Length: 116
Image (cartoon, rainbow, N blue to C red; front, side, top):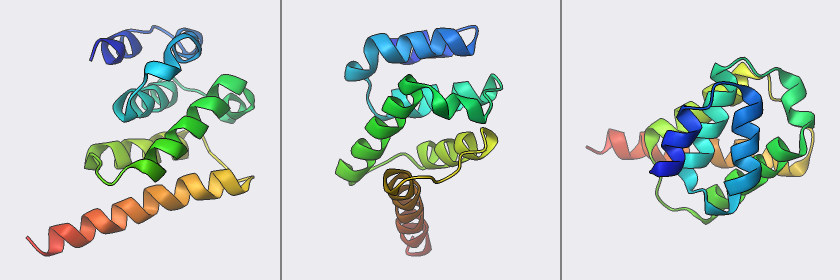
């Protein structure tokens, strides 16, 4: 939880990227989503995807989502919102896998809600 506090208190994009660079190996899924969300909230432009730290963050997010059977519904919506806000464009197979996994998990979540 401490990492999330650190991320949310970052005053700008550069500070978040420094936290990502220094602590990504300690991030859980929520920390990854929070970082992505905060970058978008602080106005990161599509140029952010050229930064190696962002690419590494998205790679970790993709891997974590592929490993995960459970998720927070808010994490999915926050991830999608952040990627859309920063005008994420699918350029590689890994990008497609990331977006596809988020979509798959969202559909699974919607299916579970229908059976409640």
